[in-house]
Length: 145
Image (cartoon, rainbow, N blue to C red; front, side, top):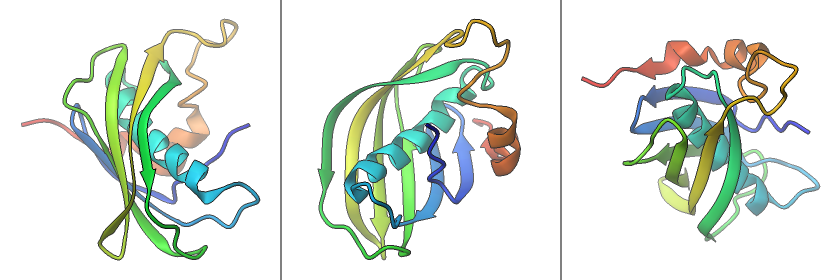
């Protein structure tokens, strides 16, 4: 199952931070679980940039997560994920979701970058062409100065 939970990717500051926006989902699933996934998807954009989106990602661990409130479905939210220690194999990231300027969710999680989750495929299944084109991912990368 693929959940496309982000509405827009704003920027990917390679090696530092990714920023996206979305809306609180109206879903049969818990919004809190989907908030974690939104932070992971935003963080995945940051990790993916380390391999030019050639590797696949594994959401390996949630160390901490706090959800302090869930606005009504359809409310705009701002998602950020960052790391000070990314490497070619992934790393620990932190994420936040804010709504109306207030933090409503935060988490620390581990994303791992790996080669070939689907050995028969030559391209990443995480960063497939439709995803990359839909968000114009490479066009959102801000190179470090």
